Length: 114
Length: 111
Image (cartoon, rainbow over all chains, first blue to last red; front, side, top):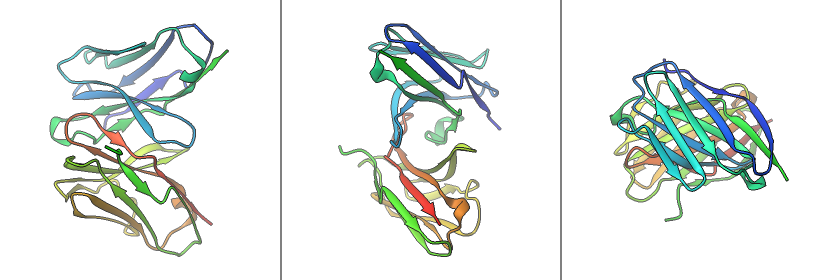
């Protein structure tokens, strides 16, 4: 069974600093990897999706990489802002015919202080 | 599109009562997923449907839980009878391709 681990569990940084969030998975048969943001009491917002054939994806200040051989994905958030404070979750999808059947990490809780 | 819509947003019920959670997936999406989030176990997949057909219900914790998808635009998750340990946030998600889109969740409290 795929296990997904996120380190660190919590992170507090001053505004303007770059954020590096790590996600590791045990099964390299992962098909795609998706990063989500969750605000307190809210749903999950999809940030970036890295498909099996890709190594990274970028959206604005966000960049996510995927290294299947080492079982790792990293989410970079450049020039952090207080509005980036949230919990960030990574999730791996096992196969192409069950997109959405995701194995989630426990999340990294991020606080960006002004 | 309004995204995945779940109702109710909050539900408080007494132990032993029947609870029904509802989900409307994004129009055109052909797969629907029910997840549960708790502090102890994080996000867990309960069941998913492809083209309205249940494919994998191995995550459903007990026979007290059941899910249906009578058509492409509606799904329900029912708990009967409910127990305090069922208290959690229940999410519905839908996909058409590799990206999953989640609803705002239903926070269920069983007292």
